[in-house]
Image (cartoon, rainbow, N blue to C red; front, side, top):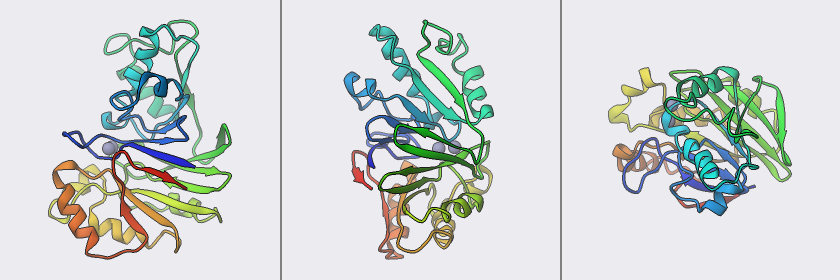
Length: 253
Ligand SMILES: [Zn+2]
Ligand SMILES: [Zn+2]
């Protein structure tokens, strides 16, 4: 599995971009950074988006991904967005509603945007991957994804505070290779994680205990304003299997 980090932060500032992790150039885990870094030809390769939740930093460039296809008159390349029924309904009724942005689920024909509802706990396949969504604990409905490829399984937590079900499911995969776990705040701002339901460094470290030994852990979704503080605090633990992912990085898993 090749994972290209298009964006990996919990906000937007110069040098920092919201979350999109591009799997094998075709499947994007969230859609916070697509069109601002990919050429149009690269954008056309994307057929699927796994959407963890409807917060703006996780999907806003989906709007431009689809609009670019319309403008360039490439009408045969549908983007399918996979998430729960509620999460898809939120982006449909609040964004792709013919007011904020065109309803690309209906026009032009054939539709450029397909919303594909998935049931939590039921696996579905995209290309060679078996994928499962698991509910996590965020301020609104949100899921993490478990993606199993031919060479191993990866877990993407999405935005969440401490959670259990995702790790119980992850432990059933004997070929688990990597976990992408959100980390948003430094300890100085840990109070903010309570209402926003994210991890600070200390709760992130607690969460690591639920992940099987030997699995690589990639921290992402760091808030740009606290990036250096978080990095310093995390490095102090000297974990060998934990690293903060960088924008532009390519990981082979
Ligand atoms: Zn977020
Ligand atoms: Zn969020």
